[in-house]
Image (cartoon, rainbow over all chains, first blue to last red; front, side, top):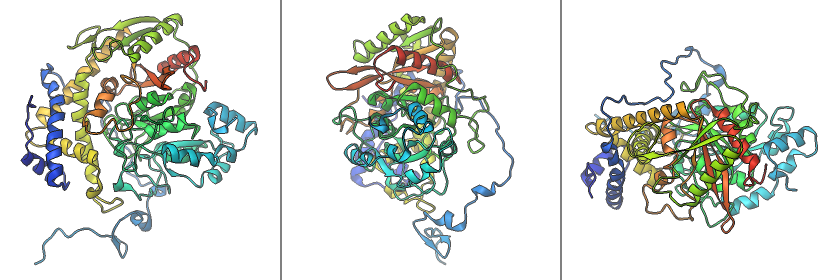
Length: 103
Length: 466
């Protein structure tokens, strides 16, 4: 039995790119097979009559919850605290990969 | 007597009367036993010192085990993933802060499935925990370490979190009590997010009363989690002895094709008879393939809806781990996290989100409608927590849907946000493994499940700590 949406290995490559996850070719094959297994389980959704049903994203119905736009000084990190867990830092800054190309 | 085998209630009383000392509670023995069962990923070496400054408060410095997806200031918090393997949080999760304010001390951080993805602890980057009831078996998960810590007496009580079964399923498998509050009852602030629309922190304890006591301390609105409810928080221990006389209880899933004749179905039918003897009115709520009045909607559809919703939310929540601020980045994700992130990326992607994500959210509405109707008739619904006993170590290998199938009986109510409690309702004398009884109520009615679970616990032999 095939799932409604057959996930191909090309789709898996595209999804990996969107999710910024690098995968090997072996992983790609296993992921493709696994996704199709999972999608077969998911397909049961299409046998349910949901005509006219409103989707639920928030179960308790709270809406528009606000708080004062103030700073709680007790919870503000020092620069050292903010950087304490960074894998790469330089002169008190986070180091990030270059995303703009050189001229 | 081993002091660590005390319940929360007895430990508080003995400390107040100065019958025991705190350093005795935090024994060396914990370290040895921990090695064997692999329960704590990080032990708090400062626990005894911290405890001595916590006396005179309600918890008197009592050691509490905390699942490792809760941030603890100055104490490593990994969510069982290599992405966070060296992360030392600069602040406490709201739940942890509230426990400390009440005099609790974090004794250690317990193992879980990496990012809480799973029902076994086998997806933990640091290896799985063993079930203290029988070391050849899994503890369940994702809060497997917290449930095992309680079962092995490696703490007085513990904190876990549930998205769809992660408190109650391991509590069931380890033969302890686990309480999943209504969504929004307890703050998610400072917890490594999994599926934000269902994540619910809650207590795992030796007795129902211990869980109620802990819930009192952690529940209530928090400005750092906008989804916490302004609903008033009652004293959850106050009505505990109310009993079940005259209340209406519906039994669910014992007639489901997957459970017919199972020990889980038998134990829960037996539990129904006990409630009847205690004065409740019991009725079977038949399973239905379609949404039908007076029936419980087949849980299979909830597995599908949960799978889509959970993966979608995971892909969004885990997008923030980029190796810049406090984590090692995306190359460190394990296989299960990769699978979930990628499947969620797919179900939210252009052209597919209407088909999968929106349909799943509509099916979720159907379950909410189903419960709304049933709770018009019944005060409580009861069901097996898990379809069976703990499974053997290694059971999750090569089964991408293992977790969802183990949690099938919990997913309908968790995607609806309802509260539930799992209490031991049978022990197999051959394997020493347990079956859990799941007691559910309508939104914000934790008091009802607590008093029913307490009545059951007192009337039966299954809880050795009571």
